Amino acid sequence: MRAFLIRRTIQAIVVLFGVSVIVFILLHLLPGGPAKAVLGIRANKAQIHAFNVRYGLLKPLPVQYLDWLNQLVHLNLGFSYKQNQSVDSLLAENIPRTLILVGVSTVLALMVAIPAGIYQAVRRNKPEDYTLTGMSFLFYSMPTFFLGTILIIIFSQTLPLLPSTGPTAALPMIDQIPNLVLPILTLTLVTIALFSRYMRSSILENLVQDYVRTATSKGVSRRVILFRHVLPNAILPIITLVGLSLPGILSGALITEALFNYPGMGLLFWNAAITDDFPVMLGTTIVVGAAVVAGSLLADVLYAVFDPRVRYS
Amino acid sequence: MIGGEPIDPEVFIPSRPIVDAGEAVAGESPLRLTIAVFTQNRLAVLGLFVVIFFALFCFLGPVFYHTNQVLTNLGIEDQGPSLRHLLGTDDVGYDILGRLMVGGQTTLVVGLVVALLATSFGVVWGAIAGFTGGIVDTVLMRTVDAMLAIPTLFLLLFLASIFTPSEPLLIVVIASVAWLVPSRLVRAESLSLRTRQFVEASQEQGAGPVHIIARHIIPNVFGTVAVNATFQVADAILAVTSLSFLGLGIPPPAANWGSMLSNGVNYVYSGYWWQIWPAGLCIVVVVVAFNFIGDGLRDAFEVRLQQR
Image 1: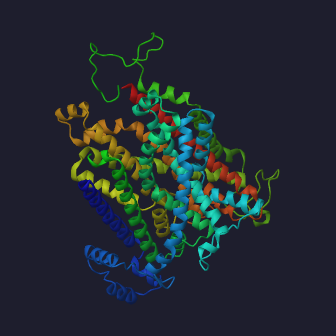
Image 2: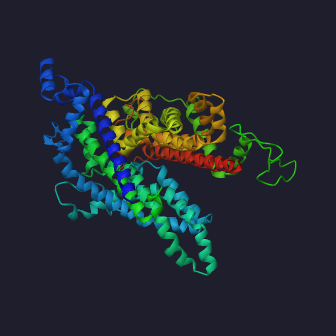
Image 3: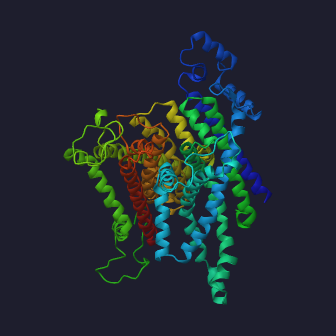
C-alpha cells in the first residue's frame, strides 16, 4: 500500500508541475506580453520597460518560471487590475460558492445515476432500459445552456415557480434557496448524463461475473445478490469515474454560472476572459488544475483502499 | 486477417462452425463483417441517414432557398414564421431557415475538421508514446495528463480570448484540446500491440520504429480511432456552441448553429420561439446522430475483434 501511495503521489506532483508549465506558457502567449495586458494597449515603450524590469520579465524564461513558481508556493497569485483586488482574495470569495453548486449537484447526480444504472442493468434490453438510455443520450447531447434555458422556460415562464437568476453575492446563500434550485438542477442533470454513460456498463459487467452465478445457484435471492454483492463491487469504478469527470463537471459549472449569473469561480473566470483580465484567468486555471489533480489522486487512493488488487499491480 | 498474422492452413480451426458455403463466415473479410454488424444496428443507420440529410440540407439547401446572410435588414427583424420567411427572422433581420443552412455548413465543417486534425495528431502522439515506451512514453503522457487536468472549457476560453476567433482559428483552438483523448486511447492500444508476434517479426526483419508505427501499429488501432473520431465530431459541435454562448465564437455575419441558439436565448422572455428551437433542435439531433453512429461503430468493431 505504501509503495502504491508514494508512486501515485509522485505522479500527481509531476502532473501538477506540468499544469504549472502549461499555465506559464499560456501566460507568455498573451499578445504583446504581460506588460501590455496589464498596462493596456496605449502603454509606451518606457512604461513597458519599467514594468518588465519591475516584474523580472527580462530575465531568461527558466528563471522567470522559477520565480513564478516561488510566488505560487507562497500563494501569491497576482493582482487583478480590472477588479482592483488580489487574485487570491477573489478566489477565496468565489470558490466556496462554486463548491456548493458542484458539491450538491454531484451528490444529487450520484443519488439518481447509481439507482438508474442498477435498474437499467437489471432490466437490460427491455423497454425501460432503452427509455433511460435514450433520455441520457438526449441530455448528453444538449448544450448545457440550452438545457438551462429550457428549465427556465418551464419553471420561470410557463409555471412561475422559481426565479430565473441565480443568487446574488450580497446575501448569504442560505437565504436564497429558490434562486439556487434552477442552477443546481441544471448542473445535476448534465452530471447525471455524464455518469450514466458508464454507470450502466459498469454494473452490467459485474452482473455477469462468476460470483453472481455462484450466489444464484446457492439460492441467494436476487435482491440480496444485488445489494450485498454486486453493488459494493460496482461502486468502485464509480469512484474513479467521479474523479475522471471532475474537469467535465467544472466545465459544466462554468456554463451554468454564466447562464444564471451565479457568483462563483466559473463566472469569475468568464468575466475575466471577456475583459482580458489575465491575472485572474491564470490564477483560476492553476487552482482548478491543482484541484483536479488532487481530486483524481484522492479517487485513486480511495479505490486502492477498497480494492486490494490495485495496490499490488 | 488484418495485421498479416500468418495462419497455418493445416492447424486453422475456425472460431465459429462453418454452416454452409452461403454463410462463408470463416472466409469473410473483416470489412464486410463490420459493415454487416453496423447495418444491423437500426439506431446507427438512422444516425447515418440523419447526418446525410443535414449535409444535403446545409450544402444544397441554399441553392433552392435563397436568402441573404450577410446584409442585415432591421426593417424585418423578429418576424414570426410566414410564407416569405418560413421560419421567421432573427433580431437583425436574417431569415432563420436560410441561416440554419449556412450556419450548418460552418458547424458541420468545424466539427469534421476538428475531429480529423485532433484524431491525426492524437494518434501519432499516442502511437509513438505507446510503442517507444520508457522515458519518451512518460514525458509524452504526463504532458497529456497535465493538459487534461485543466477543464476543457477553461482552456478553450483562455485560448479564444487571446486569439480573436475566425473559423480556421476556432478549429485550431478546439483541436488543440481535443487531441488528448485519442492519444490516450492509441497509447493504450499500442502498448498491447507492441507485444504481438507480427511486430516482433517485423523488428527481427530489421524494420525501424518509424516503419512499424506507420505500417503496423496505426492501421491496427483504426477501429478504436474511428469510433473516437465520431464522438469527437459531436463534442466539437457542442464546444463551438458553448464558446458561442460565452461570447467567444465566430463573430457575425458568419453564422453557426451555436451562435444562432445563444442569440435566440437572449429573447426567451419575448416569446420568439423560432429563434431558439430550430437551431437548438438541429444541434441536438445532429449530435445525437453522431453519438448513435459512434456507438454502432464501436459494436461493429468489437465483433470483429472477437472474431480474431
